[in-house]
Length: 209
Length: 304
Image (cartoon, rainbow over all chains, first blue to last red; front, side):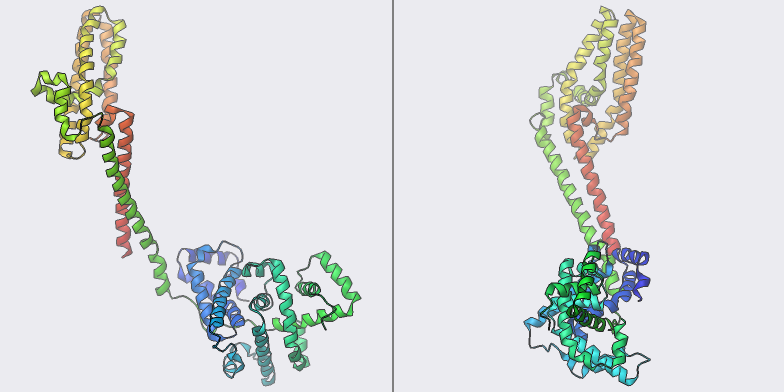
């Protein structure tokens, strides 16, 4: 992805510059990682506005605390910050349960989704399936306990390996492994019915991934 | 459904899919998979689920989350200034305070041995017999002798060197002078520190008092040397020359640091190590106070 271009020396240089207060340099890091952080926040919170808030909050916090980054995976460090922001939001919601937890099942999600789901090659039918799938996945993710959801988003959505996921969540690898497996098991059950409904061609495409 | 498969097995299968099993675990699971259709089904289940999750593209941020250079750039640039300026100001204030404390401490610790500031004149008159004999001149001589005394201090060693070499006459001729000087000087040198104590506050006096003795010190010593050499001349010319030569380099050596150092220095030399310590601390503190104060000032100005 576009992260590849920002890795290595370039990223180290930008981090160093950001440490010295270079906002422009930090903003290049923001542009490189904002999709990843937003995805994380959205998958964790299941809601666009809250995800935007958490992402912005995370980048501000990252800029202010850039000196606490001590090497290692920078994206894992960033994901840890955005995860903390998401947990803050989730705690806030638990204190005020009147807030709707899943506004996505309503029509508003359809307005937001096509932005990232639209594929030029998709027929309207395929696009509809994609949208359905996306909503089903998010619905099932929302059902998971927070700490299970965190692991499955880290590994299966962000594509982190266990070591990096451990770094980003602050848990040992054994915890990553067991929570991930339990999360996948629950998701399997949640998505089972949906899987049967998918067109065979679509299933085959996804099997290859 | 999942009954035959334990949590541990699910974990192994899950890690197997992520290729996070070590070769041994992997080989063992491979063997069990080929033997167990339930495990193979479980693996297939999880593989689908995993593939489904991974089929989801990374979302695009609905907007850019870049920080505004105006909002955060200035914050970043301002940060060092408000942080550092008070630090330097504090250091300056602390150094100033310590300087005052050290000066006061010097007074207090010097108090038992030296007369206090207003007392110094009386004490000098009472305790120093020699100036009393010629009050008008002695007063000025005592002051001048004070720095002179330290210049002369090496002289006794010269006298000692001279004594064995010279004849009885010369030693007799010289010794009284030296003894006189030795007796006279220590006492003025006692009053000298007290005068030195007076110096720091009235700067004008310091310059007047200190600069004046300087030119006179040399003549005094030269006179002493001349007196000695003249006394030695009558006895033996050779030692006289050696004395003059011996005294002069010492004079030069003594004068060099004297001139190089500031007007505050005489007391340092007078009381040796003890006052060197005080002076050094005072000098460092006042320099620190001035330097950090200046830095704080410029930091604050550049910050605004």
